[in-house]
Length: 259
Image (cartoon, rainbow, N blue to C red; front, top):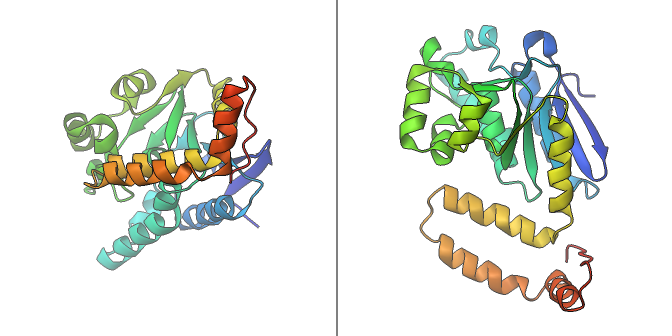
């Protein structure tokens, strides 16, 4: 039974809520472990077609790591913590073949910002604030922040935000490309679900390939165009491609089956 993470599934969308509002949903080992379990279930449960990650309460998505826990770490402990988190949570989210979207409802700082950035895209409430303030602790981002923030907002902004540790409001985050949409706190989850509903009406195999190929592009891999060509060709052999093109010609809505 999960104690720090709540999951619920409706209309094939799983909502994962980090549930430590008294600690501003700060990440500790238990949260990381339970997020890993929840993400693994997204991969395995055929009834789940997409997911949302959010935080409990009005104040925070995830306001960073549990500082008291960090104080106990040495070099080996820090390496193990980061490696485990990458392997079980952050990289699993980024590479999930199903869409995972962050609904950021408050502070997304440090590991919280990194958790949001691992998702395929982000929506934010008007009250949301982002930042990588690890420099204030004599540390750097350890859950992918130096890489994903640079990919999303560019080298200059990423350098400044990480070196100053300054917080970024939702409007500035949207202007920089860190978030796709800013909405009211009341509408945040519903708007996120509405976007996923549109995505889930499309061909699942094509969505999976879009995720995979866009991640390749974001990482700057040199063979991205060739991989796109190969994927483009493979999809022509799928039933979904036949259904999509036939439905277009017949002027009806496509009924995709994911095969």
